[in-house]
Every structure is written in C-alpha cells, then in structure tokens.
Length: 107
Image 1 (cartoon, rainbow, N blue to C red):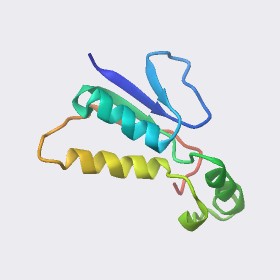
Image 2 (cartoon, rainbow, N blue to C red):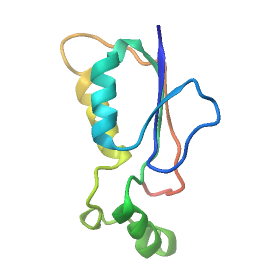
Image 3 (cartoon, helix red, strand yellow):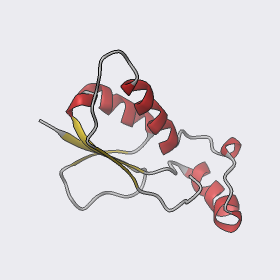
C-alpha cells in the first residue's frame, strides 16, 4: 500500500486520502512508521507554528527575507533535510513525487 503525507499545521486537504501531520516531529514519526518506500507523495508546508508565521509577517512578506533565528519551531525545510538524510542511508528508497505548498516564497 502506498501513502500520501500532508504536513501543515493549519490547513487540511479536501482529499481524505492524505495522512495529515501537523509538525516536524509528527512527520518524522509517520515517515518512520510507514516506511519511506511506502510513501508515494508528500506535500510540505514551510511555516509550521506561531514563530514562523510571525517571521513571515515581520520580515518575509514586507522584505522578502527570512531570518531562521526568529523561528523556534522546525519548518518544512527541516522535514526536507530529514528526507534527504533518510534517502542517503545505505538502503535505497524511492519517492515518486514530493510537492511543497507554501505562501512564503523565500522559504
């Protein structure tokens, strides 16, 4: 069986075929539980949590810059880094599609 994972702290897809996770830790736990080889598609949000949203409104939206020092929570970028580390492990894994959905262009 193949799975689709949707990482977003606020939004929920209208298609209920997705496994919805709300933060980076939940994402990691779900990927490890399902197994990377069983995941067909991943949709990632970048801004996860209040400090990421505050950074968006303070810097990213008006200045098109992003200061990760102001973001306390792990972001979708951390989840991407986790995926890269998993894929680079000795056992080969394969992802058919990975999508990113975000409002923040600099993320």
